[in-house]
Image (tube, rainbow, N blue to C red):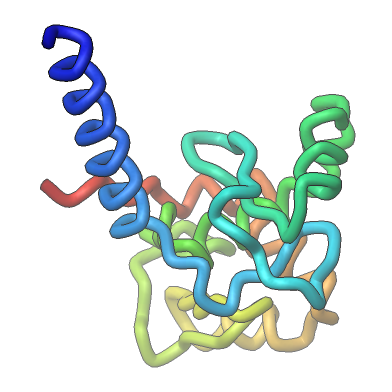
Length: 153
């Protein structure tokens, strides 16, 4: 009887944790970090910062997990974009100046809206090539302007 009760409790806890995680992470429109044509899947995730990054398959997930810290750091900007796209992190201040956000300055970068403090910062970002935008607006230096989304209770 105790074993059944413990098993039932464990199943309930796993179900709650799965539904809770599903509420905080959105994979809609999110693509694999290694295969940008393939949709990311919830069951193919790996730890990154205080969140998770997602892949299309176990091969891509395994490739990420086998990478050295230095290699993972080289793709930090793309991984950080995914943290924002999955709503695990949100922008708090301008990625260029650290200033207060002006919603009227928002542009889309890799499927994620990014706002700036002023049209000057927005203009600088708009002049960049796509890869530069990702590196400059989501690289570790700029990512300090983003914060982990606290779980809703």
